[in-house]
Image (cartoon, rainbow, N blue to C red; front, top):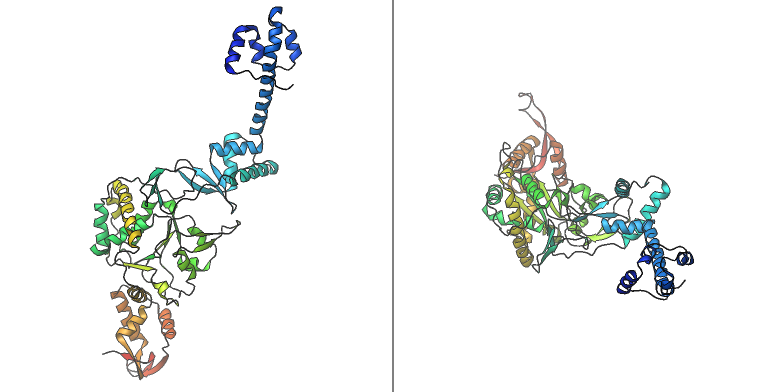
Length: 490
């Protein structure tokens, strides 16, 4: 039966008041109209009014119930379940084939796999997620719905501190929501006070007064989800000199989930290793293994704002720009075949020249409130960095090149200072090794093994030989190994 009259709320109230006996019929589903009418809930005088005024309204109730029933049925369909789940727990399915779930407590998106999704559903609904049919239906429904729920990209000038986003360009701040693809909240609040006296004191002990601003700039620059200034940061020094503690402080500040770790050689050689940097703010590297760097293009791309190919295993590859700042803590740097300005200008090298005791963890002296103050300090510092587009005391390209070479090709530096070429002259390998190791120790360079030293000398074009010496073997004489055609500078 088609609906001829739709009674509004006011008319409905009037009818209920006028025909009290009809109330029970009106609020229930009526299966058979004629049967209900024949029950004569009112006296005979009101029957005609019942038929004319109430019949169409009861029809409307019946059809409304059917419509609601269809909606309820939809909710319990796979697609309806997916719609309801994404309403309660935001998630999306990106074009690479990965699920992302909104972490309500930490106000950020994070990667989850299909097992995480199925376990979550099974835990709260007791739904069968084991059988192949159910599992496939659930995941397919969520994939279809999730693809429609991809959030908006954030601006490159946004930094999230806990649940609040700050735009360092406009000065705006607002709450983080699933509407935007935020993945890197900093676990501290912006206090409004930029003072960090305990950190000032520690930084001065580590690098000296002149380089305190640079350490704060590195901390601030690590926060931004962008790589506008093409630098990687290298902390040079022997053991127990503070460089590892600085990286620990940085990890405490930006949050462990915003940091990844890798090795330089692995990063340059493995196509999957670069994916560790995806959606991270910082990439830390420890002691390099000193193989000669020849493939530097990936390093340039990672620090240059270029598009990088990322690939999670068993997922679709995709292209994005990297914003994880690269920080290396080491004693020395590897030699490189790349002698271009584009390579050298990327290296911001900071010396940690002092040594400290391990008896005390100096980071324990930093009160928690200073990390909140550091958040304030970092916003101010970052605005200055982006304006001047350089870091304090980083030097010219020529100075950067000289500093890099002195920390990588230090054997060359030693030869330049102490050795000259001259035909028919020689230096015994033992003398050369002893003096070189003493010089390395004085200058806090890493120590080369005898084998490595020999290989490096041959790479530089020096030839070895043997010579008889009467003084060897307690005056009995013998042969000693020598480097040919060189002598000490007097």
